[in-house]
Amino acid sequence: MTSDYVPTTLAKYRLFSDHLVAVILQKALLWGIVEAATKRLKDGSDAWTAAQDEADNPETRTSIAIEKARRLRKENTANIRWMVNSYINPNVAGTITAEDRIDLGLHVRDTTMTHHPVPKSRPEVDVEPSGKFEHKVTALNPTIHKRGKPSDAYGVRYAWQLGGEAPASPEDLPKSKSSRKTQERFSWNSSDQGKPVHYAVAYENSRGEQGPWSAVFTTVVP
Image (cartoon, rainbow, N blue to C red; front, side, top):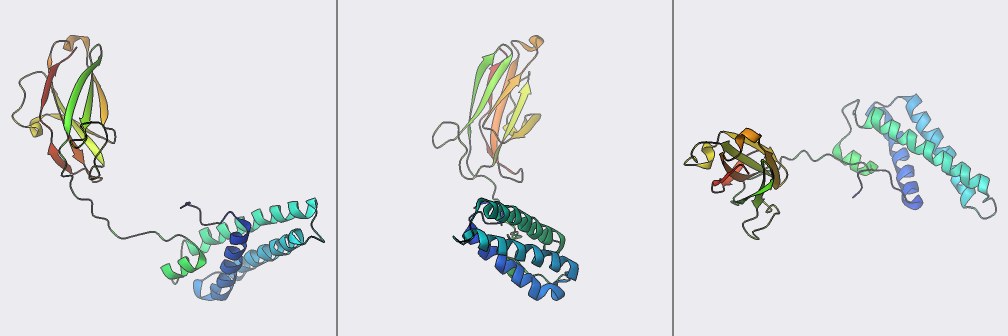
């Protein structure tokens, strides 16, 4: 589905425009739309409709008529967008319902809260040298043992510790960051070469809530 509410094909556009203008003219007073605004909308619609009729008629169809219809269609679309942005979206009088917007052919924002459960999948972690003083850390889908997040994962939480002994639990790793990517690169200083590094990964939902951690993977700075 396109994010634009204005149809692109001529036949659908005409139905959309004719209906929207007619409904707005009928309910302008209820919806708090001033007369000058409805006149601008109606005049632009009438001008385009007449020009399009001329361009569609084989007896009056010329390159000039076609170009005029195209120009006035653009102006009519601009008027429609102006009306929607100035009066319909702000809902000036507070009387425009979601059903009204649907009837006009406009999009309605879904305000229903969607539940994002905590991921149940437990990723595997893979660490490889990717250059001098650098590691490539990958969260592997436990089902396929490859990159690619499972359906219950939105992002990945990477945790690590440079130096020292590996902690008893991945949750005890002191540093972490969130990413939408299933692979991240970690770069270290030359003075860190040979030091142990401990990594772990966990999937997150869109609210940053973590699922189960992978095992801790211990390696050294290459």
